[in-house]
Length: 490
Image (tube, rainbow, N blue to C red; front, side):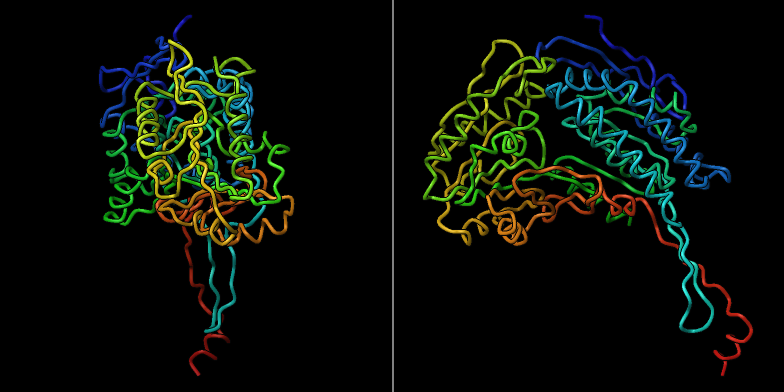
């Protein structure tokens, strides 16, 4: 096949030569063949991108000072240009990280335009300034202003969907952005930059500089950045939190998870297998909120183990570009090796593997969905995030124990409760200590906040809360009118 090679970076609204000479090679996890390349960004490229973003934000006629309706018009054109490239975006993501194409069409092609329109509507439907009558004479004018230049760092697992969790609200609010995509998924980011240019997004408002951890760290610490928004591992998030704390820099962190699916004893799991698959093994197990701990009542434990095992065995493994594929390859050889290390750990700790654990093909970084039974919540594979198609099935005696097991984790990002009684399931969900919980399904709806507690992160994305994360409040104390001034003096 013809490779996709970009010789330039998108900085300041133009395609310009990079400061360095190295490139990032992109390889298909299904074939292991090289499929493209982009320049490897350097600290000098980050300097240029931040400078362009700063100019775009600070200029008297800059993006921050545009009327929200004017920004919304640009973002609508951006959405249209993304939609025109949607099929190619989905294809590139599938080729790079192994996401099944049918899922990429939803997450990577469909979700970003939806978010752009949602946040544009939010910005244009409510005033950015609110007068408040004072209690001590006079009045106050409270305004919501864009926070400034945003450093956005995104992972490889859902690269476009996660990018627009940050880009859509930040751009709608009037911020400018320097985006650092992961090295594994850069071709889709450059296609997105092409869409931004075609839409007329003003110069410097959106900049794309790919690179490794060193480049990301430089962006986080850059003096020209006003806020950092990061999605990735808890280990990296901890360093970013420490750095932003020292710099007194606002930060949003969406980190790891080890979420639990609580199957109540009245659940007809066999009737909900499609939704259950979407909550546990979606995207080859490479989503942070997936429910990789499955808690089942002892009275039905063996039955549920058999049902989930049969589900895992039935999933079609293969080419991620094939619409029939349910499980594609893991993103890289390193990631597969990591997951296989956890599988070996599970076996060594006495867990019973009911299916999976093998490489189904000689070529590509594939791994069969793996189910472990007969273990407790203290096992390594029950406590640590694996980020692959591996589930731990844990028995419980009653609902109190199920809730206690679900809450016995350093993470708190997602989770589900499964029951034929939605009202009762909701009462159980209220007691689960997690940022989000689904009832008989799980979906990140744009209107509701998404994020975690404990080691799963800080702050929220999506919903109005996701917009507020890119705004700061400013109060102007208006002078009292003469009669009010006199009353105050008396």
